[in-house]
Length: 461
Image (spheres, rainbow, N blue to C red):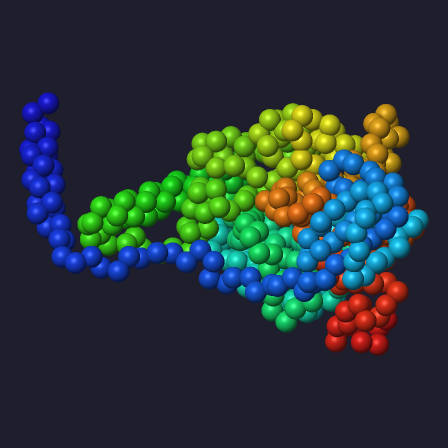
């Protein structure tokens, strides 16, 4: 026991000396981290009023209102209901047509992988290390990607752009308003939180294991996540200690800045939402346990082919699951599929089922993707109506992105992101006829003035 006494004394002396050496001079300038160095410059364009009349309205929150009106003022939804006694600058008679909230795709790579694609514009996957949390996909977004225009013609009003899935931590995602713009900042959704792309399973172990670099196995994946979160936890503590000492009038040195750890710390602080490419049920369950070990929320699981196996667990933990209706079987971890996957997840208590695209073409028909699920599920005994299924591509998608208080449903005070369809959006023949974002018409199938043109597409349409 005595062998430890000198060390204790030395430690005490060292502590005392450090105390004597405390910088008591005037405080240096406080070091703070700018969390939004590339802020949105997007501004809503509409300051007028629009009245859409006589439509079948699906609110996005489970309600269907026949022969209804939607009143839009200054970019916001003012009223929804029958026979509204209001006047407007513009009135659209939508008799025989359907109105829904703008469609939201929470999994897109447009801009980072443009459509049509050329090799020099493939900027979505930083495959140089298992952890590239330092990259921000917004720095790869090409706003003139013609795919944004095609998506808008399919009723897409907001979308999240994610980096690719080669890495355990792929980098930051960004949410955009689908408006024509010269810059990424001109599309950036104000107030939308950032996302962090993570990836489970085969992708990271294949990309790096094949190079003889960890991870080579799923246990290697988990070890990589845990090491990163341990480092992020220490980084968060160091900055909090700095802030505490500075506030107490001391003169501490700021911790070394690390933009990779800035992103992970943002998750631990609850400011950045996780979006996790994860197919298999047991891996999604593992990722929920991982989030509990380090005290953050596991967020949304994307491509969850086996989500139906753990629907209750996802609901209990408040996880959204972003799913395809019928795309599966393209690799081993994507084989154990059910065509009722979305419906089973949706049926669980506190569920948040989302239909996503992960495709530059499927994004143009997300309404039909939702229709596929409704058909498959109802064929085997579910009873899913249009007013419920629309949630999968509107309100629930907004919830997964942390913007459900702003958009994703037709309700008073919400941003007027609205689509007028020529018939039920669940018909295979349906087309988006008019698209509004913040009350401004950004697409009209019958008016070329509202059909954006790209240099890449000249002579092709």
